[in-house]
Length: 249
Ligand SMILES: Nc1ncnc2c1ncn2[C@@H]1O[C@H](COP(=O)(O)OP(=O)(O)OP(=O)(O)O)[C@@H](O)[C@H]1O
Image 1 (tube, rainbow, N blue to C red):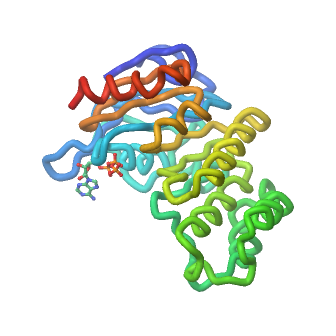
Image 2 (image 1 turned 120 degrees about the vertical axis):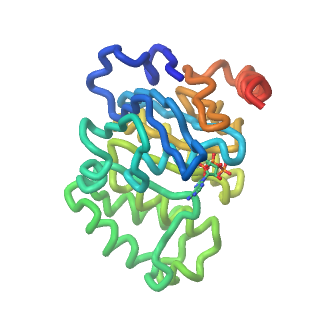
């Protein structure tokens, strides 16, 4: 499916130079089953794209193609003008997977000191990482394996945000956060997009979150993009998304 809208998504064949992320007829098949088909998107600097769709729709598949954890069966994905692998190696992409992986044997402080600086020393904002960890009362001396699910997610998000990435890719980042933490995290995401131009692609089942933070919404169902458009008015968003999902059910 090729879709068009003013900023985040353009038609195939249109000059979309300068985009942080582009996918062109991107597709992934597992054996005989297509998990994602014909996905064409273009995401510019500063856009926050909310990816929504039912279980098994293809959201994680799309995000993993973007960060190079999966290879396309067909089509192409370009991140920061190059391949996902090159972009990931550059340290300019922050990625938090669905299960917010951390190193169980390392403490919070060790994550911040060893991993953070190791990811990309030039961009790593150690002060911001420490300030965020303190603000969230993450226990610095505790091993990640002993953190709660929400604390582990917050640690992974702290690492990703403090890299000051050009692209932030988040697979259900707020699922395990309490409501206040969710709202605060979304505010931080908006701040990163507006102040440093970070482009964000995040999947969520919480449509209300899209209204709060996202500039664009992409609805995926059955492995196909059903809607890709600027976020409608917050009051309208839930109805638009549910209508689209209802049509594709
Ligand atoms: N490794 C795999 N092998 C075979 N099929 C897979 C594999 N990973 C995902 N799939 C299938 O691909 C489809 C899309 O899965 P995906 O995980 O991308 O969905 P999702 O939208 O992220 O779902 P959820 O909201 O439940 O996390 C599903 O039908 C799933 O069963």
